Length: 354
Image (cartoon, rainbow, N blue to C red):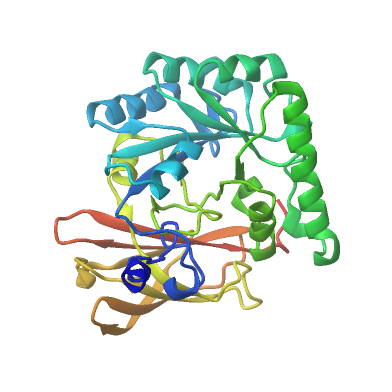
């Protein structure tokens, strides 16, 4: 019986983001559960189109989720669901980063209208300043089904700091933010979000060590059980992606289960044309329709080997990625029922300042 139980433990990645093999990372049972997460920043604030969603688009998102029978829960509840023995349910999560005033003014009223919970990740240094919510607004939001998560104190570009001091700074900031939130809201956040979606592997281990249940990134994809919960993907929503047809495309997708991704580092190499090698679970996928995309450029995808339920492939930018700090490689494949499965890998050029 003991050996049989061990055979049930299969580890893949949080929407394909694991850098280790299933055998090396057997913490959770892969029970077939999925959760689609979205990340928003501003609502109805057209001054910042790259982080803003029109209010009419946001309501269209919520209306579609309601019409299509999604159960809406907080981020921490989603993590608990993935690990639980609950029945499989169609589940989605609304997360919001940074706690801008436009969330309280324009986003939260719509969530209340549809009786939907959400998770708000706050950076404590900015609370009450400029465009940011104050503590009274945050406390009021908590009474309207808003879960508060940790987003560090300063929301800095931690990867810009030398590695000799980076990790102490990162850990100290998270601890400081926790203390400030506990003092002002009388809660201890159990979930974390990396500023700008940027992190390296030691930073991931720090978030885990500090006792969080999970950590959210900003690369696109779908959470699924059996994954690395400290690099969970979320579909970013902005004016470029918030039209209802684009939202439905993301909301209807499934996870592309990556058994192994290499290299382990997310840092873009000096040649700026990083080669990514993926081992994917190809069960029920239509491999001849595989697609790849490089943000802001073209992509070279090559299938190296297919054996049983595993396919090995490589993805590489055709031209050097020099214009952006963050660049996504994305691979999508439909299954035999026509549902597209999504994996996205973020490369970070820490030399490029924003």
